[in-house]
Image (cartoon, rainbow, N blue to C red; front, side, top):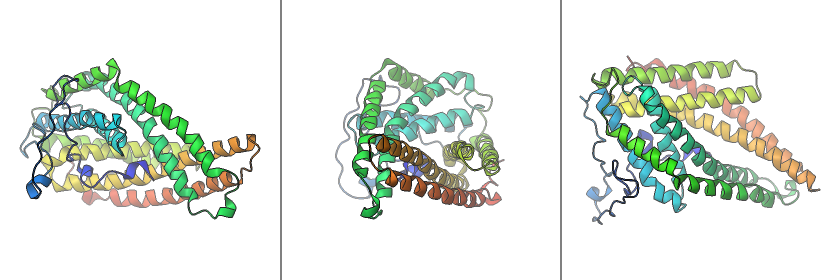
Length: 352
């Protein structure tokens, strides 16, 4: 199960229906919003919740559009914290995505909100993302290896393979969750939320902030796309092995940034930006599956070494390693096909 494929279709726009709000943007960190009143079944009850100040007009300035996106993601990040603390399914992943969207937006639209004003916050979001990532990756990779083992004939599973996989990841997941809760309890995290609220409240002071968003935001998306294009080309010309794995991981980050930048531009640019974001999501997804396979291969090697040192037969872990090697090769070929399609000019004509 890949970490990057759990976004629902609603979340793929960057403006998903958020969880029940716990802390309105601009309120103190300790403040808790009341529970939403129950509503009857029907179309009205199923409408996404609207967060004040997060729905820019098509005629919005660049500053208004970017700040609206930041407000929504700030609201989502804070709303997910209670769910992460309760260890609800997929909550860590959703919070990690919100942190990444915020950081990508700050990086992509420096002409709207100057980077010197947001550099510290971007660094703090990266710090939070690392803690969320450690908790998420242990969960995903354990499931990935279990899924790989499930269709394996029993005669090829020599020794306590399932138990060793469980024993390998369980303490890592527990430690990562403990570390994450310490992060969420820390004054540093509270300061991050306060700084995020301050910047999202505006105003935006960049040279392009007062210009029409439809004229400014596409350029930020184009820059992110070109970085992804360069990195995909570099990965293609890198020798197979660890160096190519690293290059593809870097290309994935750039595709993700281009996707999130396009999502931020969608309310003011419309369907064209949405289609481009969808294509970048497909690239990101395939490259994410590839990265999962790389990490699973490393884990299979570590598990095999541990089994050997314990006097067990390491055959099954070698089988897992080989299976992941072939899977990564298939995903590399698929990534090239998906990128060629996503890079077609018809998806980029709207970028001025």
